Image 1 (tube, rainbow, N blue to C red):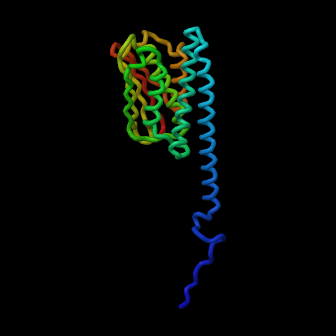
Image 2 (tube, rainbow, N blue to C red):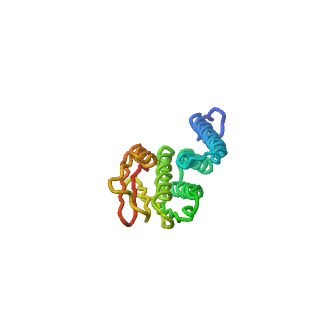
Length: 223
């Protein structure tokens, strides 16, 4: 009995390779990686230019605000660099990102406060770009706040990332430094106000607790 083979697909070869939809997906992925690469390079250029001006700022308050702005831009630069290195397109390993971010915040902290240990413990999890951005900025604000305001000299800061139910994660930043003043208004602190706004962007509320043993801030986020 003769065997009738199906007609060849146009162009021959592997059907998946010839599928125009797959070709378009690969094209879009390539364009996305190129955009991320350009974003990474642009942010690094902005950082380099801004750092050239740091030494010219004499007012202590203005210098502190300027340096915190650098930390915020660095948080985004690290994110885009890791996205580009992973080649995953839109997702990043959250623990690795937060570790790199904490190292950067610590390195940019002046004086003896840069010796305060920052411990990061993270369960394996990945988050999308639009969750990683606010989370990275929240970590930068909270860790910077601990290093600059919680300690007269020595102490510790701990950052933990855990799963908190189905498709949810939990970020906790805690220190053993001085507690926040009684009745402290977070709206008078630009960093904490930003962190609260970013928590709302993640669909949650930043919860801060403080007592004689230190301060803890926590927020949940989608995975």
